[in-house]
Length: 154
Picture 1 (cartoon, rainbow, N blue to C red):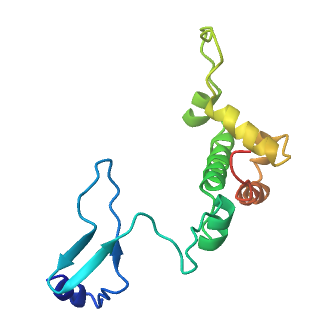
Picture 2 (picture 1 turned 135 degrees about the horizontal axis):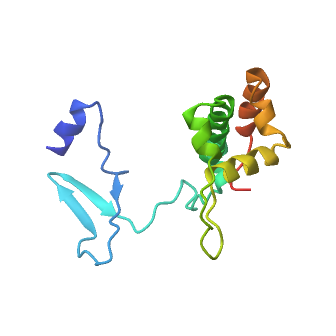
């Protein structure tokens, strides 16, 4: 049955190379599984061809998979949205963002607001007058693209 199901999607099972690993808190009794005429050995950990673990840093994994950094993507999108908000003068979105309640803030460390995060992100890019620059879409687009280069939680 295993070989038949694997064959349906174009796989061939090599019982000399195929091994299995169980991750559980309880210790399962079997050290091998036999399915029809194939026997699969249980392993406790996986190693490469040289018998060494491949422990990789986040930088190595980013370089290997060539995926964009999720933190940089979020910062870039946040800055892009800030441009929309800051260009929407005298509209409801802009009014809500600029609104300050007449109450005092609670004791302790103040919660970080969306505007605080945006201003910190653009400060990291060396931009001091973000609300003014947002009026010019071309220059703001360059800032949004530069934010994709912000690496990690720095």
